[in-house]
Image (cartoon, rainbow, N blue to C red; front, side):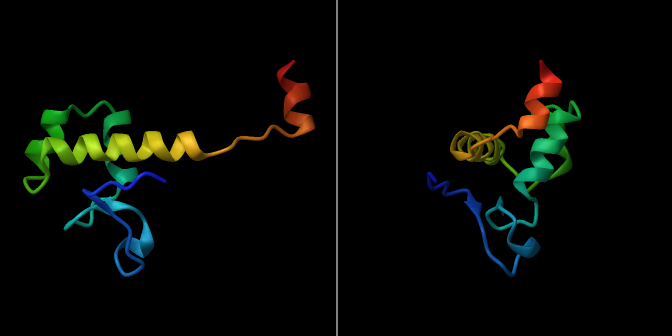
Length: 82
């Protein structure tokens, strides 16, 4: 996993979920806001401690996590897709 200086993982913060350093905002939450069509500006206005680089770090963390994940189809899901 590539290190992301703006993202921290601490078992004592949000049960160890990756968060924006110095906040309790999880990467998952920020990605969820973007998926719900919040703009970068919406996030920055709603969370004054967050800067653009934090949002970009969340996206980079999500990308890197997905790049390192492996997805395996079960035989039943493969048959259903055909």
